[in-house]
Image (tube, rainbow, N blue to C red):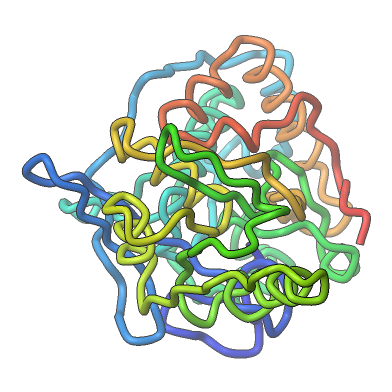
Amino acid sequence: MQKVEATVLSGCQDRRGIGRWWRAAGVIAVAGSLLLSGCSSKSENSAGPSESTSAVKPAKVDEIAASVPDDIKKSGKLVVGVNIPYAPNEFKDSSGKIVGFDVDLMNAIAATLGLTADYRESDFAKIIPAVQQGTYNVGMSSFTDTKERQASVDFVDYFNAGILWAQRPGSPIDPNNACGKKVAVQATTTEETEELPKKSQACTDAGKPPIEILKFDGQDAATNAVVLGQADAMSADSPVTAYAIKQSKGKLEAAGEIFEAAPYGWPVAKGSPLAQPLQKALEHLIETGDYKTIASNWGVEQGMITKPVINGATS
C-alpha cells in the first residue's frame, strides 16, 4: 500500500493514499489459540509470524534472463530496496530473516532471471528516490502503482489489494449492508476513519440502525474480537485480512469480495530496460503456477492477477 512519503511513521505508514493510514498486521497462532501481532500507533515493529516458504524453486529461463541489463547480469544480483514490516508481504521472522509474500515472489523472479535477490532495508520514503538514483535496481514494499508516482518511476504491477472483510463461518454478513452490526477495526485506519463511518451514515440516512464500530489499538485485537464473537466482522487491508483468515485455521472466512482495489507494483527507474524482464518473469511464474503457489502459501490468492502490466494504474 502507499505510505505517507513525507514522514516515517513507526514502520506502519500508509502505503496506499497520502494522508490515509492503512496499516498491516502480522498474525501467529500460539498454543492452539489465535494470538495476533500487529502494528499500531502505540506499538513499534512486531516480529510477526515465523513463516517462510521454499515451496517453489524456479529455474533460470535463458530467454528471459538474456534481456536483463548487462550491468545487473554481470553482478549476478538484483538489488531490492525494502521497508519492514508489512506482514504478510514483507517482515522479519523470529530469526531476523526477511520473509513474506513479496519476498517469496521476488526470490522466484530473481531465480527466473538467473539472479539472486539482495535485499536492502530502507525508510519507505527513500526507496523510490534510491531507485531513481540507481542505488537499488527495484523497490519492493507493497507500493501502490499510482499516476502520481509514475511521474518518477515505472511500475511492474504484480498484485491487487484493497479492503476485505472477514466473518466467523456460519455467520454471514454483507459489507454493503451491515446496519446494526458490530464491526471491528484498527483505530486510525481508513476503515475506521472513512469506510465504516460512510457506511454507517448510509444506514442511518435510510432509517436503519448504525454500524457499531469497535476500535482497537492493534489489528490483533480487532481480529480476535471476531474470533471470540465480540464483533460480527472485521474490516482491514485485503492481504492482512486474507492472511488472518489463513492463520485462523478455519475460525474466520472472507465476507464478500475485495473492494476499492488498486495494483501493487515494483518501482524501477523511469524508462529502465529492467521493467520488461521483470514483467516477463512474472508472466512465466503465472504460467507455471508458481505465482499461485506463493500467493496461496500466504493466504493472499484473492489479490492475484492474471496478466502483469507496466504502469497499470488508473488514478
